[in-house]
Length: 322
Ligand code: AMP
Ligand code: MN
Ligand code: MN
Image 1 (tube, helix red, strand yellow):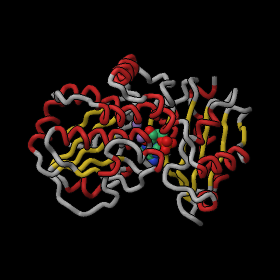
Image 2 (cartoon, rainbow, N blue to C red; image 1 turned 180 degrees about the horizontal axis):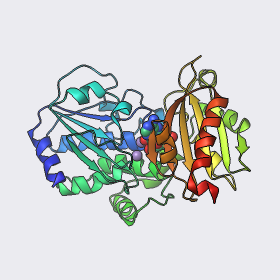
Image 3 (tube, rainbow, N blue to C red; image 1 turned 45 degrees about the horizontal axis):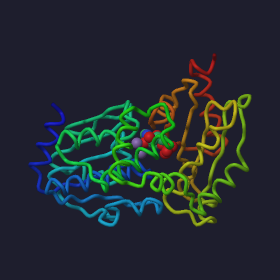
């Protein structure tokens, strides 16, 4: 079975690298740190690489041991976490040059680009997949690994509130509480804390938010000029798109983020409410993907052009017509 194969590859490898997706969120960071610490428990000193480490996650166990630069090296084994396709993976060359590759993920749109792919689209977070995996490997989840895993679960479930949450999510959290982990502190630090720059971006993007399609679409954007003016750092845009979704009547919330100064390329974030509109399918049309209720893509055009392109695709979906 796949888990046995993964364990065997880990045991056989001397040099292991752990990688995750660009613009890493709490699940990307949490799963990378938890995997690095778990490999240490298995006697493997792996390199974990995160080039853009959001400030708010720097308190998590193992964060200080992460490499922030990609150095060319031949690895026996590369493990990709929380990343649906190779083009979003940071350290893609290391992955492609590694002797063996493993993909562990929870995106339904995963391209299965590893030698071994362990993908569970119903898991609420990649971190939750690691719980069962580590138990299977007989690695005890101590409070450090547990805190990293919990950070990923809390951020990817919006604080235990998305429909993806499972009974196991709560059982695991209860177990951590019993071990003395300060769950509410982790919750506050990863979900309830805004950097000043995040707050300033929120103000600007809410000020220019438009309600389109009879109030069913919330649309807004952030430019590179905004990001510069508020001294934004990696991760400072996180959470903004969720604010549009919570407006009554909104079915889809859209946030555009300009990639570079002066260019017409934007990163798109889309969120839908429980109205069954699959935003991953819409983003897939533009070469992106994600989850049914949270997805993204990168699109070329001006803000107005992209808005029209997205609205055209949204109107095409069956669910939109009803
Ligand atoms: P974001 O809006 O960046 O928070 O992303 C929401 C979800 O969509 C996450 O699960 C991402 O992994 C996924 N996603 C974002 N951008 C892309 C992309 N360009 N291609 C594939 N999946 C993406
Ligand atoms: Mn992620
Ligand atoms: Mn995730």
